[in-house]
Image (tube, rainbow, N blue to C red; front, top):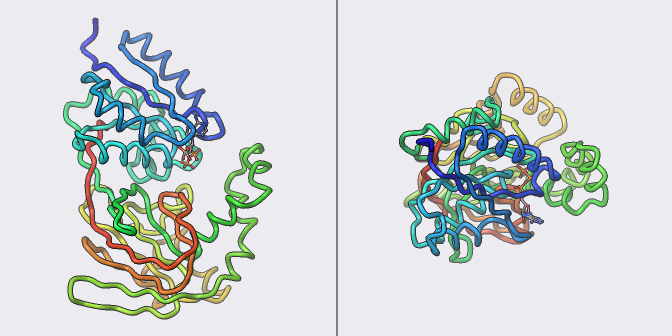
Length: 311
Ligand SMILES: Nc1ncnc2c1ncn2[C@@H]1O[C@H](COP(=O)(O)OP(=O)(O)OP(=O)(O)O)[C@@H](O)[C@H]1O
């Protein structure tokens, strides 16, 4: 017998086009070598949310640590399952196994091999508190780990998901190229109006093309769009960009990728906030942790929450 905790591994075997199964194989090999007791549950087609909620509500975890293995979509669903459950304080562990893994970038887990992450989980003494975004959409509460975006990033995600080229790029493991291939459609979308309310104060922005509310610095598989954002701080970063010409876009992209000076541009608006409302008055695409929110007007009430992690 070892002193290690028992693990319940909740794996999305389809994450990263099935590559998550290779990570699971290496994890199991290590657990067997160390005589750790573990159980495996695979996520169903509709994801991890109901599975995690039911495991908690039916007390099937039986004091084991739930270890989520998958990408950003899977960890988002797992957290929403915890929050929906009768024990919303339940701590999770996470081994990134997706294609993008931006949440893992935000937690600096991407610097570690999966077996190092596993060793940290097995030897952690107390769970750490990680900040989450919380948003109310049509009186329904959702939690996000990465970001919620309206405008260019959501347009790009929407058109990429619709594209007939997507399976082709996925097959070649060139997932990021699908986004670049959609850039001409994204530029055809016009600017939109955003209204922000912070307490009693109201702010209007007339010609916004990009609006992102983020919990950590990274979007799009490691692009540090909000270098000051931290998942350990109890706030959210809001960044908006005004309508830009191609030269201004090139300049901002260069600054994002080199020195983080893009936030100083007069065309970029940046705030760190705790509680605020955001209204978009025209029909626009939205995304939350990569999930398409559709094309419509938005009224969103943001606040923060937290999730305990064995890290
Ligand atoms: N058994 C399954 N069969 C088909 N799809 C599944 C199954 N389990 C989960 N999924 C789907 O996988 C998607 C989530 O994938 P996830 O985000 O974890 O991986 P990824 O897309 O490779 O990584 P990332 O989001 O980090 O780029 C969800 O939409 C979920 O519905």
